Image 1 (cartoon, rainbow over the protein chains, first blue to last red):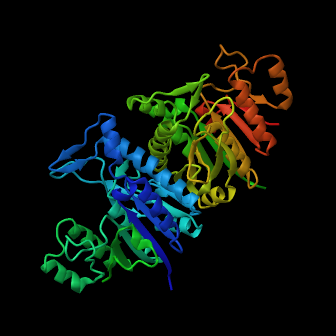
Image 2: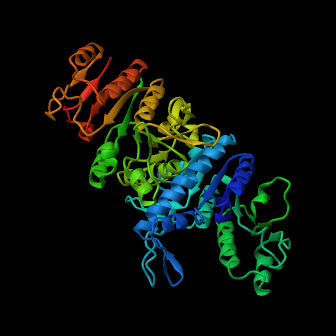
Length: 259
Length: 259
């Protein structure tokens, strides 16, 4: 039987709030066995850019990562956020090691090709280096990934943190029994968007089709769920969606997704 | 016989100049066998602080690291500089992994006690985690350390890069035959400060005493040399001082220091 491995992704709502972050890191530290954390930088990068007088570039409502933005992202994600998370995990007796996709050649990507929009220094993942990540995990280190990859030619690339989390989970599924936890601001997939506690506790491929046809899952949840099923079809054992309290061993109010 | 390990420290003059940095990284990549790189952030942190309207605080001519400065230092050293160095080393087929002292609990320090001056978030090194660094080196990874440590209670600390390099070299000397390379703007210790090529090729404890009494070594070189002999007395095999060209296998114009 394969050993269990938890891959946890946290969003901006946790990173931007010091109290929430420190509560989350205490919870994360208590997850038994090997684990991996993935984070973005939330609004911190945008706030720093503003302070420096650098404006966010949007094309058709989508953010563009130009050279200046990539510098700010590298500073905030890989520097400020990553190292403070690592230092706090160490204080929780969790032997964290902070990584970008360039470190140990952990995640290789390519710059997104220019079609209608040139997204700039944005990377689409090509390959997760399972051997390197496994060797760190085997050394009882807890990898903490920020949302940066590299192209192997010296270029760092801004990469979606949800995708990084699912690609790591997929890669590591060769060696481990993986569970992917997506923490966000809701308690899970809701039956009624107006009722925070109307959590759908379990979704599989069959019930997913019904939720889609009943229009329960729409808008922002749709790509999230598609991403979950993509991971499950690629051998990730289980995906859980909810707020950070789902990491509490006694928690039951979150959504579990299986095939 | 112990395996050789090179510990190379680079200064601001290399980090601040993209051409010099990329030339250096190509040279560093070609060093045979296991190696470790240590860097600070040079003037990049000061420049960013200025752009953000944060003034450098000096007390009695010495820089103070307040909370704001520590944020900037964490962003530039551990983020911008470290990750760009790692990505470029990867492009040179050198499997680098960027670290602060918090990562893998690699370097523990304590906040410098307040005496005449409160230096703020400045750390004095307590312990290098030889086991963790050795396990990375054994996995054929090339650690790249920025000048940050942690106190084990969640606090990052700004720490002198020369000290980090010598403390790592000292720690690793238990397992390896270590050579410590200090790269700076001169070709080595100079007999005549006005003649860039008047390099003292070899210094040992005896000749060091003579150089001191002849006042050849003074000012800025004095603490540097003291640091070198401290490392040598703590089992570092050899210390080399010079500009980055000393890493070229055919180079002879640099200062080698032994006991």
